[in-house]
Image 1 (cartoon, rainbow, N blue to C red):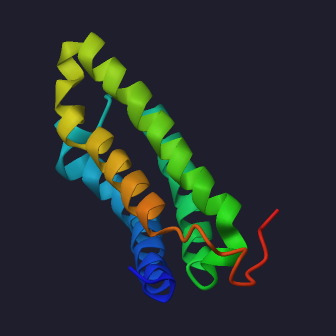
Image 2 (image 1 turned 180 degrees about the vertical axis):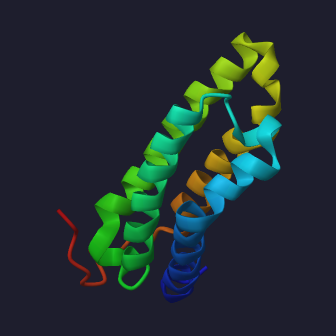
Length: 131
């Protein structure tokens, strides 16, 4: 895939993921509790707030992904770590096994798609590296 296509698709994915984080996470908790609710309303409210904030910044980053590389890589790696911790918890606590098909898988998919679409040769093409 050429770099221009990667960036175009990345912009769409960043906007879509950002929108899901902003407005879609809480409804998922209500609609599919076995896949998204951990039964701790205060913790879920906190996570919804954190992910809604990240979602707003991903929407903003979708305008210029190469200027927001560190935020995008934070999204990738924090999704991997968060999904990994939840996967272990879902296995250790069998009442949460449904999360392996819900939020755990969702976080891994988000991380994989964004990482795949992130161009690797941006510096060679004259794009400045974000701090």
